[in-house]
Length: 515
Image (cartoon, rainbow, N blue to C red):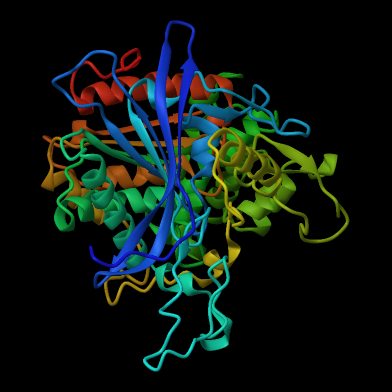
């Protein structure tokens, strides 16, 4: 490209060592902005952090490379970066509960650097990623209005942020595809086994990119990892007429109720897995027919079903009757422990908090499992980038940009399926384009926002060819949306992913290599 952006944003490159119980991993950390182009003109700079390990011995097979991003839309990659995958992580209490201030960083013994190089990407408008201002000079040489460092234009219509161009499904995916393609070229990594990993809406991105990267950008994928994904938006909100989401929530309600001692155990007391299995069977065999039949469902059978539902999810029968079996996540979070004046988290219903307004009819407080995390991840990523990696910038790091979330456009120009946006079709096509690509979908049991049973349900409906079905793995863990904050779950997931990379990326790159 002949066009070069006028940017004073300086990259940083540092050397580090991650000390593990059995070995040391020496790696190079590169924190930098990569330019995105539109018709060969620079339009944005995407911030990223790359951790690249230099193998001790020359190997004929290149080391795997994984591109990582979060969701939102509007979330930076700091959650996976500082919570699970990077060489440093935030210290949480054993069961994922929030520690008292200040934030504490520790060496991450479960860092994926053990088996893959990592590139954490912040989409435009998150982290330090920003649009570039348009040409500041007109044809006559007179200066035009400029943009400030945050990327907010003062000359456009109603002061809209410049990044809004990128806050749309297809433009966002295209930006990620361009970034990945350009990174592979600059780093000469086209022959590496390539993986993509995304959390929440980032899982939606992974499913869409599983097709787009291969079909439009020529990037072959060895593996795609979807972490607490939102795959079909029709499952994110139920109504009187859209029934499936009520059923896919039920097993997570049951898991949370059992965790808090409010459920009547369906099989064996203390056996969480069997209780969740009973909830899954109830959801499929009783709840969906009940909701679908409506008023034609026999009254006595309906009452028996309501009682069984109340027993499974630990709510009073009166609440289940009032909701007619349609239990919203906010209702569940408020009602499960209402007698203790506590609420449960939406993103991790194993975590509770004091209800600040116990006498008001609706819950009016913040969600402790999302809003409570801001102080941890904001402090952690700023310290790590500025102090450890040496980035110098006056930009604010946008951990979760609500302006992005509110402005996001889901218009797919006529490609919506039945009025809703989805990604499973693209995942199916991606798996057929590349019958060697391995796919791993994972959730936390107690996540009410993207419940695990939704992905199980969708996998059962994908109708994958018998040759491809073994390429799809679904595995879920104790915890919530970020189940990796639980020590046991993070450690188990780490071992599972080491095996996954060996299957997907070839022999010799599992846990224990690359030191």
